[in-house]
Length: 257
Image (cartoon, rainbow, N blue to C red; front, side):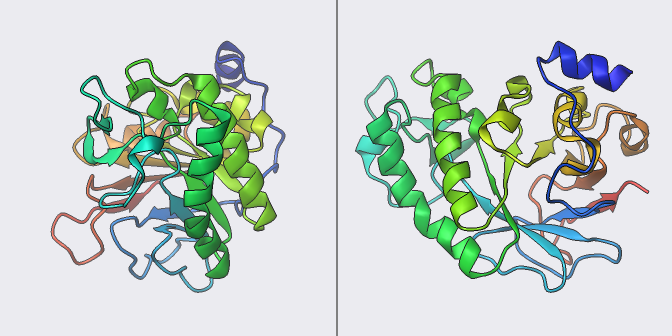
């Protein structure tokens, strides 16, 4: 009942059971800092589009869909300008710049520049794709609106489908059911227990179609408390903020039992 009420409050419609591509009972690992051999029991792995899939598992390809990757050569005319006229950077990631998706023309031009990464995901035989920074409009100083993000997300989801890749909504709890309506098939939610947002995803996609990542050192309570949350994603893990590979300094990986 709590999950249903939370979904209705968020403007969502309760998800149908089993309505998505992720394997039932998934246990995921979020390996954006570099691929490594997953721990026993892991069945889903998320890796960057420049990486390779993990053999024998369900692999999700990460594409930075709404901001530039660090060091990317991107036309300034296709980036959101800041007050100083220079491209506007993400405050938390100053080497990532916000894509200007405010017009149909700029959306198509940015889509064309993202296609090689998406094609790489398909060529490497990833099973699905997640597009990061859907919520970049919240950091755009009013230059982008949620409607712009949804319009661009629709283009990304449609092109991914043509490549045989179901697409996942990344964060942006405030979308409610809009993500499902534009074609997202699952969700990847960072720190949803930390911010009491898990029901906004599980109420729309179903718990078995949401992958959750909490971060060591930034928990609301303990990780055990997060695992005990009845609204939590079916797969919920604890990772270090840098997503360091196994064996590297600071590496943390723990999955809910």
